[in-house]
Amino acid sequence: MSRFDILTKYIPIIQADSIGEWVIDKENDGTPEHPIQMPFVGYSEMVHNFIDDVYAFEESNKNMELTRYGDILKDNGLEWDSESMKNADVSNLNAQCVLALIMGAVRAERFCDGALLDFFKSGCILKWLERLNNIE
Figure 1 (tube, rainbow, N blue to C red):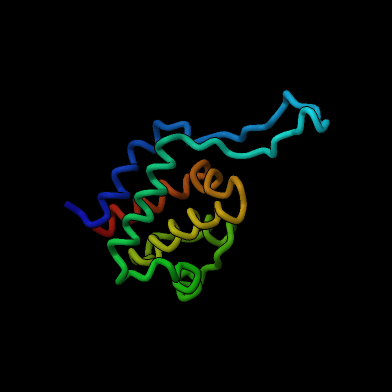
Figure 2 (cartoon, rainbow, N blue to C red):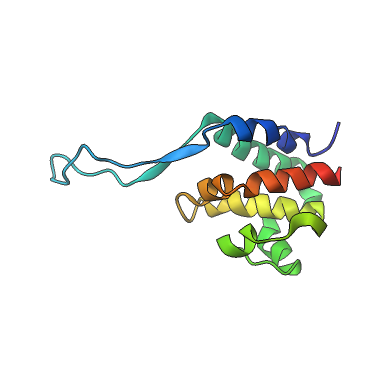
């Protein structure tokens, strides 16, 4: 059993999951009686479970210092931004850096709605999980 199983178990699940979609209020007109709800991403149950497991992994692997994901990325020549992370060549990255990419993607959702959806839909999360699988 690999120490990354809590995350790599999602590899086959991601490929069959809808991930999520933008929910846009088209029923209300913006009047005080019918205020428009701000758009948001409705994530699938799998994504919520994945997020929980990312945090559970971080909690049980404090030695990897994943709360320092920004510094870990920087130490590996990457920035904590969508383009840098999506274009990262993970083939030579170590487990800590790949996990920092995953943590950075999960944390990005707190600052930008839909960021995690983009990382899933572009195939990055799957690519990073496959790299973790190969490291083990």
